Length: 155
Ligand SMILES: [Zn+2]
Image 1 (cartoon, rainbow, N blue to C red):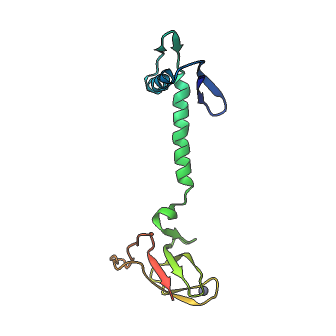
Image 2: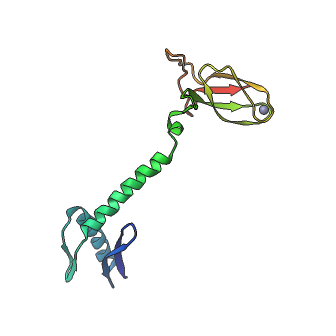
Image 3: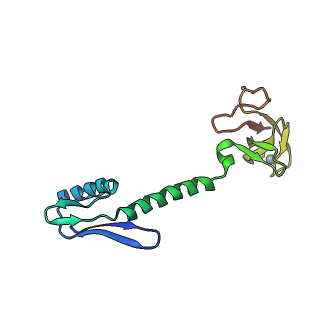
């Protein structure tokens, strides 16, 4: 078996190690040592006669990039997915609401606190809005149900 371990940098590829004809046992040993080394920042003798020198800077920069990517992925998710609260242009909060109309239309809406009904986008009839749970806080806002809804609407 031929083994090669590489570390990718943003726009270049840094080859770290290439060994031909390693046994499976050697391979797992090498891979384990490789990742041990990644944290140690030093050269190391893995298999008899095989010296491996790690470019620890390259590894660190890859790890950093992954962290940055993680953060970027998270921040692209809109905040209201998590909070269930969407603000209008004036900064007034609207709350996640699940609705189902008797015409078969259903979906998600964001409504102002205390709204009594909403209009079905499909058939135009009004649908009554109710708190999603019985737990109402002192500001009159219902607690969220297991789907994160503050309100539900059904006719
Ligand atoms: Zn409808």
